[in-house]
Length: 306
Picture 1: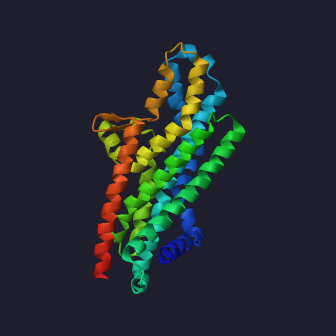
Picture 2 (picture 1 turned 45 degrees about the vertical axis):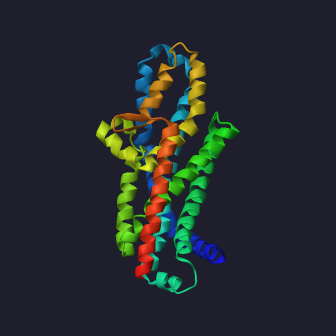
Picture 3 (picture 1 turned 180 degrees about the horizontal axis):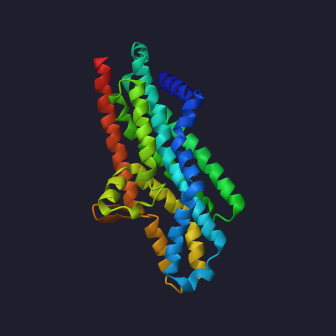
């Protein structure tokens, strides 16, 4: 296990020593934040106002601080969700760089077992993604908490970090199946540019997925990252929504909060079916296990050829 640990440490250092790589891996999150400041906040608040217009008799019962917290946490979920995609992929570019520079041949010449090489790449990417997303999430919660009540308990916080860990590992396993097909770092970087542009739409960071046609919603929710972001949204926002519902006092029978959950996708919609959080966890886990199996087959064949 010393060789596996050493390779994992080496892959982590390759990522964290490259400051530009870290910045680029957070590029989508930075874009989401910039767009939020420019116009996304008005888009989110407009959607909430539209829901309020359907229940004008409850407007005075909802505090403006709760509505502001609602939109800010939606932003935090979008930033974290996008980082759960871009950070693992950017760390896995080490696989392509090692292949392009023939570093993998040097590694293969050592007594280290093949599965340890594969697992070291996976572990380094997963660990780096969990660390980076943990830092982003913690800073976001501290900043938002200083501006108002998050309405989150200890168990809610634990659930949030567990969802982030699950999202980072599932993205890493999925991308481990993709990066072996890139022979050069330039091709890998070009795909990263496409990934950065598309990921914000897929997870609903720019526009709620509910605004898309049913077929587009299905395509978006096929990707585990989209469903993980929905799970994260649930974990982060349940407390705020419950507080809003208590403030309303039941005169709308929970209709306003239900409409907010529908607008901002608290459940995944695929093939005309609605997936509750439990089903989403099972789906993400199934894709993760499938990705691991395919990953081991792909890399075993590749290293045999080497």
